[in-house]
Image (cartoon, rainbow, N blue to C red):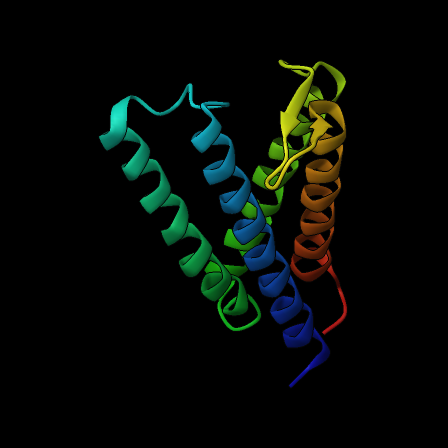
Length: 139
């Protein structure tokens, strides 16, 4: 396996973990009734989560194809920009939380700002991995 293929594999793993963490967070927040603006009714919520699951499964596969096919390389570059845009949105939530705290599973609570900063760092790390794979000049 070439160094470039290794970078794409690492980026795919990073994106997969990012997707799982976001899905877990979204399901938990939806169960609390937080952040459900995009979901309209039960059907809309199910469609949203099915689509998210497909992205978690399919996108890492596309990312691993990057070194072999030019179209997949551009897919990873565009995905890098979309993840950067997502990081910007999460950063806005961290700076201006919509609610003060979020209850934690098993008791306790965490400030929404702190939770958003954690997700911001996860998103930023994923973006860096994708960028390193798709824009690196080393073969």
